[in-house]
Image (cartoon, rainbow, N blue to C red; front, side, top):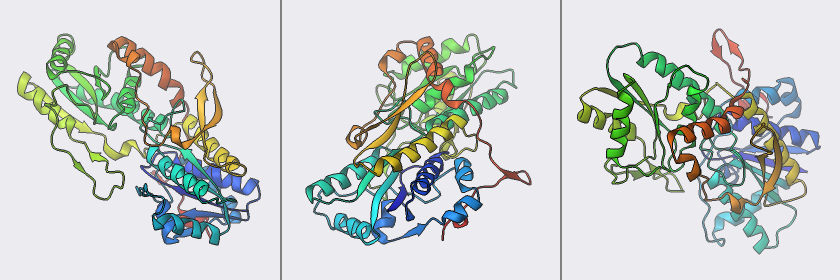
Length: 406
């Protein structure tokens, strides 16, 4: 038995924990060769891969070190397979898999990557290809994957955001003057990350994050400004957590967005709304207003949730185990109940995840208190524990791919 593993889409702090789980399962279940495709499906199309050295993997303690190695160690891509299954790329992919005697292909990724898993399985079915199982493994900091309680990668990003907002509050409170700090947080269509800023308020004697605006909200700028003014009546320094995809009802905060020409899924570039809102507040209220954009560090912080790392590892392990007998599935985790945090694992078809988005329930958004209570109750168990990052001379040290490949 040979298997191949690849990573795709945006990185997370625990995407390599899933890789560690998949490699560990490959070793435990006696796979002859464990191959690693570089830059996602592009590595398979170009024959660019490496092989795990099982002895080195154990000797370098790669299993544990990958758990705290942020970002995609195998590299990534945003390559969209053609909708036309007669496109020559499909034949090229399966010629490679057959040439390397691959029986299991694990693709670690988000919504778009599951589109790839779905299409490859459809191609196999249409062409009566047997002996190869292709399974997905979920990840994304956006927490917008259907079919699961939460997405691996989101808890660590939420932990970083909540911690950072507490630190920002310590800064903005030093002056006795009126001010507004707008913190722009990732989230193109779903506002889970911006909403996780509410964790900063948990068990704190004062409200650290005063207002949160997410794409799921329908608000005018006038309504937004009325809320800002009301908060300024009793708080000198406001912090607003703003999802990058939030737009007011009339679109006054919007500007011309553009597509990333190298992004096969044609995602729009939407950052900059934080600065536009800060400028608007300054112009209308005549007070100090500034914008802070957390940007890509949200994806690869070393402030890693131990819960997140362990769950990501389990999903990677289960993905490879699942692929030994079945194809066209994705392992997911779900919460057993809302009163105490306990999860169970199951699997779903990639069609339940591909090209879809799980958004914040409308019922959570009926008022600020409900939103805060629901979000903290949901996210707090996910950020528990700290994965131990190795430091040397005061700096974090991460494992590199060359340490455990042939």
